[in-house]
Length: 420
Image (cartoon, rainbow, N blue to C red; front, side):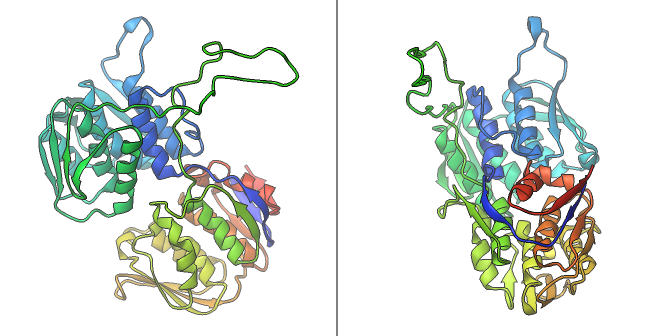
């Protein structure tokens, strides 16, 4: 699907989706706890993949006909793959990690090696692969920095029969994501002891579903005398599972407001562990240097916002995200230049820097995000300051993190035209 967005402003109120990071984790833990429903689990492709894959772990088959290999449908969600890898070791069954083409051939040997050293086996290390065996409790010392895989271990180890220790030998790439995992576990009454990066985990714990709202089973219509009684209209297990709103999606509308729109949003927490909540502070730093090493999801948006200013902005700390010809850094630079702006990447400056020379506006044009949902969203917001509008090619990639992103834009008054 391609989308044409004409210049203009947004006005109104938007219903933000649940935090994708928190939802990933609560879907997996909630499924292990027996949840029958998790509100918001289909708000984007990634969390739907976590739901489908988690269901594959626990589903029952007609007449008890257990397949030789269970299929875990992980879609294009690498986060779901990495978190469910350790969790699959709770079941001592064979699982096929089924993924879409964009993940096929991806080598995860560093992750499979950790699990193989603790009781599991893998047929190959490149996706799609098959896992088997039971994960064993014990001492884990790992030099990996992958926050999603570490999160998966933190979810799995408390549910094993014995106690474990998990020690990180390096600082993780995304500390906040791990903190979100620990908080999610606590919501299900699972405790992780010790200090960050040096955890002591008591085994034999079970995830407990949060209680649904009181009297959620009752339905009262003032026009009728009948009232459903307890057990006549039972709640679905999992109705008590709640997630905060997603700051990374809210950031798009915050930048739109920076451009003069008037979008209201509810449910954002200033106490959130999500890194993207710093978007306001980052916008204040435009016209100078802004360190984006902890907020890679905001790189495209901040680059677009920098074009609104008359002056130079440097987005520093981009080097870790600049590998490969289709990296987010390269795509961001290409997007700005395709829209008539002035951007370049300097790999030698401040850990890798995108330099944007803002002129107050963009001419407009076509952007090919090459499947990067963040670039596609940022390009649509760039229409606010464009002279002739913007065409986003392959815009449906935004469903990876927000199912209704362009529909919401239409409801907010944007002039959008779709070519499906």
